[in-house]
Length: 113
Length: 115
Image (tube, rainbow over all chains, first blue to last red):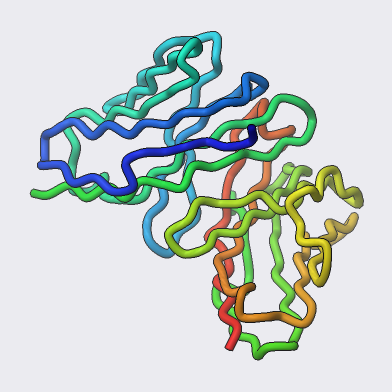
């Protein structure tokens, strides 16, 4: 199944709070899981990525948690800031030479001051 | 070091016209990917090209759409006889290797409006 299911569709968090976005997949052939951040009118920018042999990866305020057995991964944004307000996409790469990414439908995050 | 350059940023076409979208990858990048984003949707893969070769076009509609990445010059996504349903943002990404091995950088997109 070539799908990545992302939730929630939208999220409102107070400044300083934790934002959590979840993604689930079916295809065990996926071998690379990036998260992208997109501001209105801009292209997606890579935020953080993980491979399935690692259960957690942290970069600054951003952490990916990866549960291989459950086929789920999530993005945690600690100490959320108004500048984090954007749309976040999880994605998965299908192993092999094709090179393309399968994207979730996105989560629109609003961080209230 | 310029990023992925797409032009035009905005393109308006009447139904039945042709749309040509250009993408210049980052310097040193020989892998190019085109994605389409409909409003409130994620990005959908269209085509993956290396210089002068189409590697994977499994996401391309069977008719009216074509892509190329010539030896010299930008990659071109061409949509012939556009229809209203083609209105979307089209993003190009590039990478020095296949996207599983390294980050793919996205351009700012071309927003196509068909009237």
